Every structure is written in C-alpha cells, then in structure tokens.
Image (tube, rainbow, N blue to C red; front, top):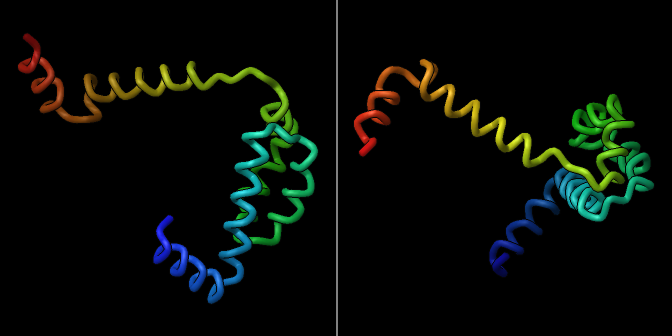
Amino acid sequence: MSKEDALTVARVEAALPALATARALADSFTEMVRNGTEDALAPWLDEAGDSMLGAFARGLRKDFDAVAAALTEPWSNGQTEGQINRLKMLKRQMYGRAGVATPKARLTAMP
C-alpha cells in the first residue's frame, strides 16, 4: 500500500473505530484460516459477535463443527467446486439463461 493510501486508511479508521475493529478481525480470521489454528476459532467468534462482522460470526457459529474441521483437516474440495462452477457457467451460457445471442456467438466463432 502506498504512503498516501496508508494515511487515508489511518484517517478512516480513526474516524470509524468499529471499522478498524472489523478490519483487525478480518485480518485475524484470514491468518487463522491460513495457519489452520482451530483453537483460535471460538475466541474469535466471541469477539466478532459484537462487531460489524457479527452476522458472519453467527453464520460460522451455526456450523461450528464444519468450520473447525475445515481449519484442521488437510483435505479441500476446492478443485471439485471449481469444476462445478465452470460446468454451471457453461450450461447457463448454452441453455438459455444468457439468452439466444450467446450460443449463436459461440457457434459462429467455432472454426
């Protein structure tokens, strides 16, 4: 971040302390996910419950066991979800949600 951007962020956070707290909580959540520290999840949820991230924390708390498992288990279904997302996008383009112009454009662009 440039010096000017850092000063702008500092001014905004000084004017809105709740936003500064939300930013710190988001940063700590990111670190928790990257490092897979399940022990920090419950205290983080307690702290985030009274902040601007309260709705997010309540949603995580509803599915606490799954979130804790996601932090500790080495497995991920990211590749599967990516392929499903790609397939759904193609189906939307080819079967009507994107309109008639998209399939026509795809067919005329084929060699």
